[in-house]
Length: 423
Image 1 (cartoon, rainbow, N blue to C red):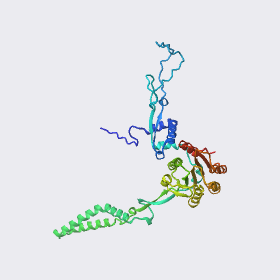
Image 2: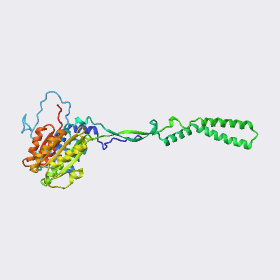
Image 3: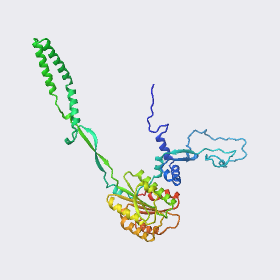
Image 4: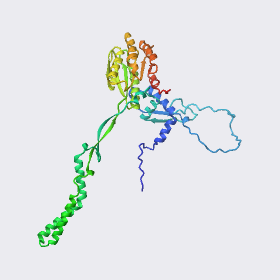
């Protein structure tokens, strides 16, 4: 009797190859469903999978078969309604499978094909064709750092790293292995010699023969060296790569009193989308979170998304703090520097020109890409128009967009980080 054990990573009669082929074939349907899901999901529900529905007519397979051949004339009895060339209308009521529509005593159809995509597949489709612009310049020049870690024992190495205990243990084992049989014979010969001297002291011939054998065995045992080069054991040290991040993203969020709870929620959703995108697509990246009202403060991820602190509005405080952190921790000759700012556009009137000057003189010459998102259903305010001057000066590295409702978050995000063709 033989047993077949399925050791594939995906059990339950699923085929990874077939599933990936299916996802590629219906990519347009899945991508559209993912975009709709992103626009309606809550903040905490962004990483889950999604249920995808595909109309049954779109999954029909073409079939090749043999026809009857030849020219035939067929008479269908009882046909008083249709003539040659007329089109039969699609039956009404039914076929969608969604429960909409009224009951009917006619018509037939087919339910839509519904399947579930995983969290990984959902994020793959959500972030497809997105990238951080201008990442190549400094990323290629950066080199990984290494740290030395222990990696066991080696037979070769530097004499300064010799492991004395392991070496003596190996030498002792080797001596036992090479002289084991000689030691056993020596023990037997000594016992026999002691017996002869006790019982047959006049038997000089056998006694001399045993003594000669004992001397020969002892010489054989002593010829086994106490320490051999084969016994030497060394502590093995290897260099483990310690990737050094060469890209940093600054996230600047306005939490002033003018930001309503709905506006803050949209800003958080935008930054959560950005955070998921960075962590999923880039292993070597750091994220700096800055919240501001009248004053700015660097915070951690938890406080950035969930703190309820509020106050007045001075946007330049966040830009000044960003510039200080750049100068202190992120040398521009080693780092790709990115920034994303979200605000409702409301700012102290005298502060907006200051923001423009800080961006033009102290930040934009050193960053790879800067995005500004204004979350407001109203007309643009002074900060937007000041930032337009920045955009005119740095057209390739500065972008600004407006978000009115949660449904605009994903389209705006894709517009800001869409992969651009290199010319």
